[in-house]
Structure formats: structure tokens, C-alpha cells
Length: 125
Image (cartoon, rainbow, N blue to C red; front, top):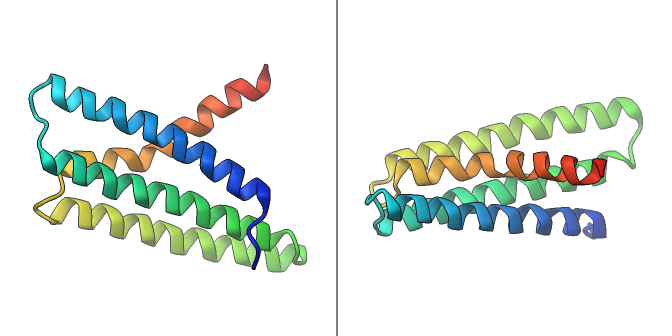
């Protein structure tokens, strides 16, 4: 399947915002004196999971628009379930693997929601 330009564009938007928020998070860890290599590795882990989850959602929507309404509903529902399991696995690994800082691995999973919030503000203008 060829990836639609809109999916690419929106994923890059999310990736850019997540990168900016990741840098800010790294700075906070540095300022409060808790920064070490585990923060960086955890951040990379969570960032990768968050962007991958958004990209997979975009692919699912791209695929769903070519189907009937009922097929699209089932496709979206299955995708959401699988992506939720994916995020759960990312979080559990981020918490249990000792070379990931737990918070630095989990917090980036929220970054796409923040990016989408900013996107909705900019679109209203």
C-alpha cells in the first residue's frame, strides 16, 4: 500500500512536535538534576512508540476510507484495539527495562495528544 501524502504530512507534524516536547522534557530532567542516559533512552523509546502509533493510525484511516461503512468501522475498531495493546507494551517495557527511565519512557506517549491540541488551535485561526 502506498502511503498517502496527508498521512506523511501529519505524521511529520506529530514527529516534529514530539521532538520539541522531548527536548523540553530532557531540559526539565537536566534542570531538576535527574538527567542521565536512561532519560535519553527512555525518551527515545517513548517517542518512537508514540510516532509509530500515530503513523499506524493514519494508515488505518487511509485504508478505511476505501471500504464500506461497516467494514471501515470494524477496521478502525480492530486497529484501535491493536494500537492500544502496542502502547501498553511500549509502556510496560519502558517501566520494566532498567536502562529506560520510567517517566521519560511514558511521558512521550502523551505528546501526540498535545500536538493535536495545538494543531486544533492553529486550525481554528
